[in-house]
Length: 343
Image (cartoon, rainbow, N blue to C red; front, side, top):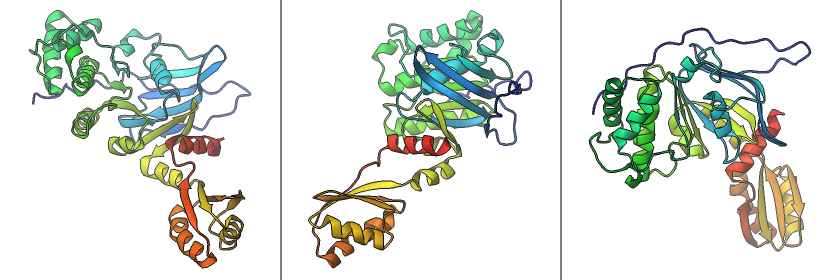
């Protein structure tokens, strides 16, 4: 494999942290910078489209390394990314990348790499022509663009001399072509919107390896995903975005503990719902219950203990169990819970 692109240049200036206007509350800033510099920050960022609020009062600071942006589809991740890249202005608040406003600072925009969720490929171009075009848009000379394009294409395990159009590539090859185009300008900040979607396990691991190589060189990578297991493989820093809000931020393992500690609702289908509900409360197996003619809906924070106890309890009561099913075990419910607890 060819060597990866050279490390990004250090930021040109310190990140600004403007004080809030008089009368505005001081916001709690989610800082994911380790001991290094702040490379990307959002302060009270809101983006509205008419009456629809896509991003609402989001504040964070991010340093080098990989930060995963976790949230369900439609949570506002792509809109947030567009603001960080200077492609659209916030309705309110401040965005700074490398200490400057990416919307107004052309030099800073030239140090940001973007791989959008949409394919955004010129399907009739070869991979070399596609990546070279991206390099030229960043102001490289034709000779520089050709050299860098060949290097980055080889780095993502594609053949720069492959004449086939990128429109004929597999999903994994297309994702790697987008990554090559995003890093051809040696960006200090790399924004990757759902880059692992549609990849098989081998392709996914290869992409994560490439991300880690860039992070090791000092780049700041923001990688969005709506899949919790993907985030576990990306790195320890996580921002959780739900309903346009920053729901949680910090170390992945801490956030996972918060998710696991949330109340769970479980439906138990049974022929003795009243007796079973009373026993669940009496033995502190449930924090609350709702009873219907054929089932109990129980709320518990200890799913493992609840699961172990329910069958022996039913036997003891002479009750038949027809169903034991979680009612809120999807990721959307986790995000809603994190949003509510942050308010």
